[in-house]
Structure formats: C-alpha cells, structure tokens
Image (cartoon, rainbow, N blue to C red; front, side, top):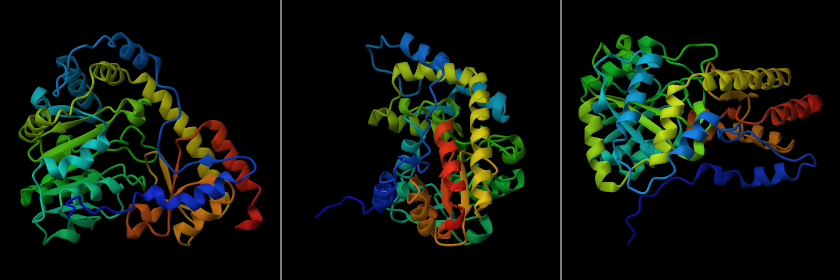
Length: 370
C-alpha cells in the first residue's frame, strides 16, 4: 500500500487543451501563464558565478560568511530589518519554492496540525501542507480563523496571484494572531521589489513586529528581482531559534546551495542598480498590457504590485483563458489559486517586450469578439 501523499493535479497539466489551441494560432504563442523571467541575468551576477566555478568541495548549508552578511545588509537596507538580525537569523535556500514546499514537514507538522494559507494563494502552500498530511484552511484575514490553533500561518504580500499589498496594520494583525496561538508565521515576500501602486512592507519591519522577530520568518527569492530563476537562489530571515532549527535539519538532508550560486547571490544582493532597471522593464510592460486589457472590457483587480495582472471579464476564468488561447495567448485560470479565484485569470508580465506588444495587437484586432 502506497504511503505517498495524495496531491492535487499539477495545475498547468490541466491547460493541455488551451496550450494546444494557442499553439495552433498562425502567428504563434504568447505565453503569459508562468512567472518565469525572460530577460538576461545581469552581467555582474554572471561574472560572480563564473569566478566561483572552481568549487571542488561541498558548500556549507548555512552559506558563506560573505553571503550571510550580504543578506543581513540587504534586509536592513531594503526592508528596515532591526539591528538584531545577525548570522543566526539568516539561511540560504535552494529557491524559495523548495522552502515553501518543505517548511511544514521541516517544522514537524503532521495530521493533527493545521496550516493557514491565503484565501487565494500560490498552490505550493497547500501542497507543502498536504505533504506533511496537515489540514489546510484558507483565510484572507485573522478574523476568519479566530477559533483555529494552527501550527503554521502563511501570508503573502505582494500576493501571487492577485498583486494585493497588505498594509502595516494588516501585517501586524497576522503577527499578533500567530503569536497568540504559538504558531510560526511565514511571510512570502518574494515580489516585494515590484510595488507599483503601493509600497510593500516586510514583517521584518519593527512597525509590524514590535521590534522582535519571535515566531517570524520571511522568505525572499532572487529569481524575479535578479532574473536568475535558473540558479535556484533564495533565503529566509527571522527568528533565530526557528532558522537554526531549520539549519540543523537541512544539514542532515543535504539541502545546500551550490558555492557558485552563493557567490552569485552576494553580487545580486549587493547591487540594486540592476533591480531598478528590471523594475522599469516590468512597469513598461504592465502599462501596455493593462491598457490593452481595459480597452477590451477586462477589469483589473488588486494588482498594486508584483508581476501579474489579476483580471476578469465577469465570467469563469476558464472561459476567459480559453478565449485568450484562441488568440494564441496562454494565461493561468484563477481557480489554480483557490475557489475564490474562479472568475479571474492571472496574466504574467514576464514576457518579452515583443510578446507583450503582440498581445496588445491581437486584443485590439478582436474587439468584436468581446
């Protein structure tokens, strides 16, 4: 008898018919379904990777002292982290998806435990909980789960998929909720560099956490901010007792970031110039795409930050996704992210300027189809 956890179907596998339809378009496919970067990895990062390529020995799970300092400097400079953030508070991970998927298991959660995730959420939060055989509860505010005693609470600001940004007060309310119940609060802040109509705030900010990191961890990815998704580079910062516990387990399991990637992470974190350049690229693409969608009767909800537009035509998202596939455009139906997303689609900004312009052209030529 198999003891492998039963997981939902991989969401993108359910798009096979849309993908086939889009590929039949005479002008080719514009894929806006996945948030994978398409722009070059900055040269400063590539050079650092290359220079560290002579790496015969095993890397350390905790990361080099140089990398740990780069992480500390970054979160203090960029996210107002307090001075008590030090070596014991930081840990590199093999891409943030790995952390999200394994965190409930590494925290020792099981069938008697509950994981709270956002109402509309990145699917791996649920998958990670199911891997640990924990119960999953969705909520958009602490008020909805007042009676629940979770072991882990995930929050995500800016949100994937909606692009919503939590206020300082909203973040603080989740911190208070988790601490009152002895739960770990994990904040996914991977899209924080891309605030458009709102400025993201971190749970590391003393205005949110009261100046202490007890029970908190924040997760960061370099994939989006630095165009190095293929490097698999992320890190966590937070309560040193939690971080050091994760470090001890990850040593046993061999969860280590390669030495060249650690060097590349230092270069990425020490340089903000390339991030600002990438922000400008995404902002241009966002303006083109949102204008085109609005002109064709779409409504764009939330989307104050991040790399997606959360859009609807007032119909099931699957219907919208199929309509767009007929024009060679692939998007992600909102029900990928939970039942509350059923009337929306997630449209990624992570496509080339040419592809975004092509989407605009195709939409403008189909006005009578709306």
